[in-house]
Length: 330
Length: 249
Image (cartoon, chains in turn orange, green):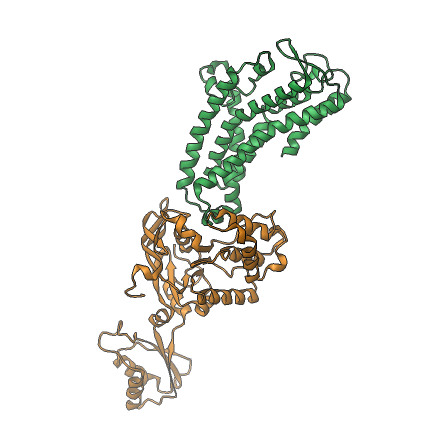
């Protein structure tokens, strides 16, 4: 958790937010806190309620219960004040296929009553440059590839200087270079002081660009916080390489751990055990420091050939929170 | 679509020109007059377009207003821009209104032009027996086009409402066109006479007063009131629906 942050520090704040479609609860009582200036990764499997949350954030859908405020103002009541400061890519890009890329951006910019007409051409040009689409600006969108449409969608979000960017699956359909460019773009936007809210199911991407993240599963928010704290609460794993697996196992059990033996050879086994949280959230009877474990093992005559404490990856954490495989929680 | 509308009087004129004399009293009203006066092509064109072709095109345009944007997915980007829901609805309806005005005008003027090109133009005999100069006849033609434009306002408001109900533009278009046909069918059933003055298609063909001397404005006024009522009711429905709608397209 981000801890004690006041509403002013938050770019997006949801309290008890729920959305019901008929009998289905798409978003279930979530409390989201996106700090200003953060690059916030919004994770979750397909169908976990990410896009529905984004729709409520942008005033496209009304919340069934709870409130959501964006840039300190409640949505959708203050939508007309908030949205000009927000750039968004929602559920894939969408354009008029019979218009050129430039003409599409002109049209969307014209729909914003706050946009300045005199600077429109220059702003459209600049946005197209930022996403590397200048060469195809005059082509009809009908002839665009998926990646080009995606870039144009991002350009649309960048038409005006924005305080908050909401990018739903921004790298969808992009080639590896395009993905890299989007990462650079997100970093440069964050460097300019904007808050960037990126929804994604690509963990590697989030791990590379985000400072904070939240994980959705089946409509509920199951974790949120800084990336470091999320990784950490995923737990650390102890890996021990020893020929004396039996003795070592007994020692570890005595220390309150639950070792698991890997490897076929009984003589040189690999023992793994998850370590308690260093903050002491898991272990009730005190935290066992890794060095104390090694000392205890050596005291018991265990020949330690390898010892490592591995930090859990975000992927482990993600899978632990949202379930394995294709059986997406409903 | 306007080109398709313009094709109707052209087709009529060319068909009449190429065929031998039409026996009076057969085919659409005024058809037999075309050979004597080309200006009647415009009237005939509008007359044959009223039952189906004009409602069809208006249904397509009005049904596409909101649902078309939803179908493309551009609706969410317009609203996030933020265009404002009420403003978007008004702009969209204004677009449909412009079409309602332009569509009959295109038929009337194309008709008059092609008629003048293929047939003699002279003084026009009105239904009351009076004759008027060709220039005044063109004015009457525009007046009839205005009458039809007003007639289509109610249907366009219905189309706008239908368009807020769905994300599939074809659905909204079809529903609108079907309603226009249903209304005309009901209007043709004598058993439902009490209902007739309330049907939006009731006055569609009632512009004969505009072809008399002096011009009668009664049906023009009744039609305008009826259409205004439809615009108010379906405009309000479209507003209340669209302002609270969850945009999930």
